Length: 121
Image 1 (cartoon, one colour):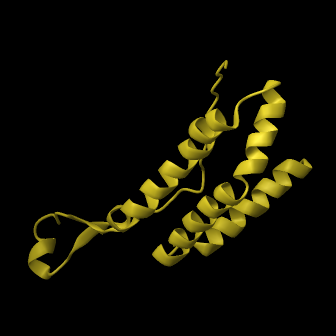
Image 2: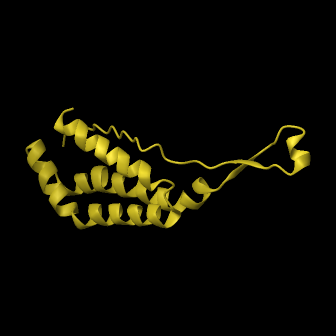
Image 3: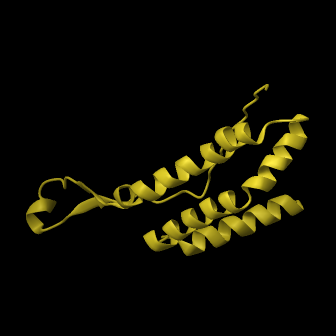
């Protein structure tokens, strides 16, 4: 196994050992992610400007910083609803015996965020 595969396997094992992740932990992670983006916005703007040769700070704030913060805020706002159990019907005759069924959605631990945006300006 390569070093990268070892690192990824270790991260996946740690993630799986923590399941199920509570609402408080998820909300804390979202808040910390937003704070990290906000606190480092100037450094991100400088790095993007250097990568593009020159790119205005305002454009980066709108297209990269703002576009990263909005989904985080959206997720924090809707987290309660997304984590709520969804009741399901129970097949006969189990319902008569007091059985209940529901679905609890859990993250799989795999997220691929593809965001390649090229702007000239």
